[in-house]
Image (cartoon, rainbow over the protein chains, first blue to last red):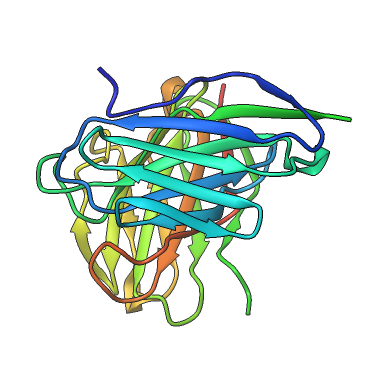
Length: 115
Length: 115
């Protein structure tokens, strides 16, 4: 079992729709969760972070966390073609996974928003 | 404010040669991290500096890899001798002081190709 699992996609949504990206993690000790966006050949860019159960909204983005189910999601409302990228879910390690400071990444989900 | 910078952006070397990658973190960031993404795999943690001290080097693959951060500013990652499996993108990230919950900002990466 991978430490952080994401569907590789591609996830194809029409412009203006809601894109839903999902991530599960195995380390029950993890407390901090991040979503990064990566355009091809570029560096990962932070979109959202979430520490508490529930929803966190920032503009068109909403992160959702359920620690009991070890599940994190990212919703993108009113999707735009410029949102087309790979979205990386990252979990901050805990003592269980061998370190508090390292990010553990999923393989990423490719999102394609078509006009 | 300048972001994390890395040099070179690309490096092509032959097996057995030595390569040194450089990372300049965001000014004032005490934490510096090295990550690597090999073809088709997730981004993986290599090591973490706090100022000039190695806090966690559990992700370093073997003793052919040497990371330094003299003076607590920029960092270098040397691979000697390089092997074919070292090919990939090497990312550097930095964050402010704190324990784990601080957001890590990534540089553009160095694409290393070992022939």
